[in-house]
Image (cartoon, rainbow, N blue to C red; front, side, top):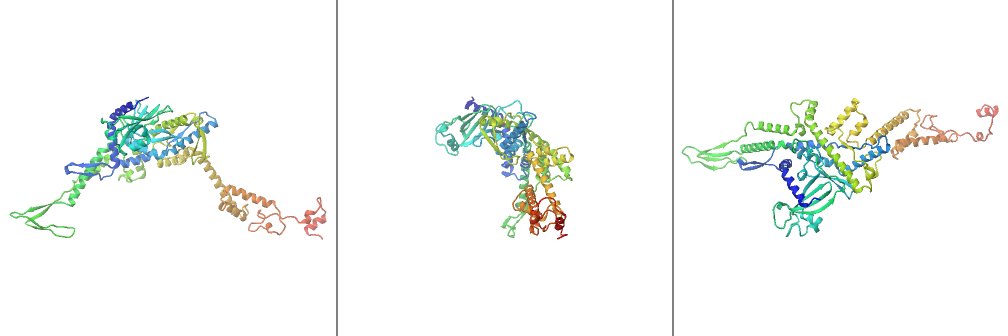
Length: 592
């Protein structure tokens, strides 16, 4: 078991080792938040930046493209050829998708994509949620994350990790009053006093510690303890709960837009100087110059806003015009181009296009060369990260709720509804894959690519449904397509037969069918079945000759719209057996 003092020592060591990287992250954060102030020392003034923040444009566009499609988990059957194994694999996939949905994974992936591109890191910690009984993803700020060094830079799972955050004294007293009261700090503490908390996460335990007051951290002040342990929890999973994927770089973390910082400062400073020169050109400096052997005097000050003329005696007024240099605009455009090249921020991100791009195909090629491979690399990083995150979530399910019956509901899937399961039986193995439908493409390019592959016959419709991010359950979608095709064929058959006067759908039957569908909201196939039963019952009954039921009405005679005519009573009472010629003639009306 690690002690609180050892955790503080590790924290200080990692904080010092990551100092330059953390400072670079802070610079990127200030620029992204618009907190940059351009110092103009020679003019004794500070100016806010008044140029386009290309870093924000590039960061938002790239992160939205990376997170526009979600990866899909695939759990292979553990026994080939077994229908039960296939059904269990499908259930495992749906259970994992349900856990993702309850964690609002789509929104968290958008934030993590921004962290990965801007800070070169997208840390997350998975913990059990005892209220909802599910593993919960907690996205952490890379500025407050200190993982242990690893020889493999591509391994997203560190042996242990320290997370820092600040809490107020009120929060500490509300949650750990019995521990910190009278021990953390001597004297009166304000409710809004900030304290630094360290959260140590490893294979075997989770430890929460609190340092002294934030402002006095690192300074030996009487009454302020260096560290105090608040809580220690045993990690029952036996796996590290923190996952810290890193952007692929050479030897140290580097965000995609780190190189644009100096260029932005230069461009913003040059633009500020230009604005100052323009302002002085609008309100020029004026000097009163004396004539030879005269004492100049201003009798009336000029005011152009009210049309008041100025009067000067014994001198002349001269204006000193200050204009920006003739190469200022060229320098601004050149620096902006360098920013776009360094940060891979094409003009298309801002809804513009280069003047030398005249076709849509050429524009797509330029944008693809700038964006696609970076998106692919970021999505590949998230694939390996989410695979490890899912394995941790499965371990949490088995460790904390292994034998407890649970259920999940995922809408938009075949047999949608509540599905009951037991973690120990469902998660027989955590072996699976996590892949994006088409790594390197956003949602728009993916749909176009799927359509092209279907058109050329290189992909089946089932594979396209599995790759489409808008289709939650490919099996359900296939059943819906089949049902809609059969329903369309049935509707076309009804329309074709109803248009034929000698067809089976006579006006009364067609009106009854329409009433069932429109007024009673009966499905089409059920309405056809009821209409057919109604016609069969009518045709199986008989009515006396001359009654309305035996008349065809609006229908064609003999098309089944009328009831059969019942025989006369005397014919019904006639003895059975062969009849003579006289009886036959009497029926035909030929003899008395």
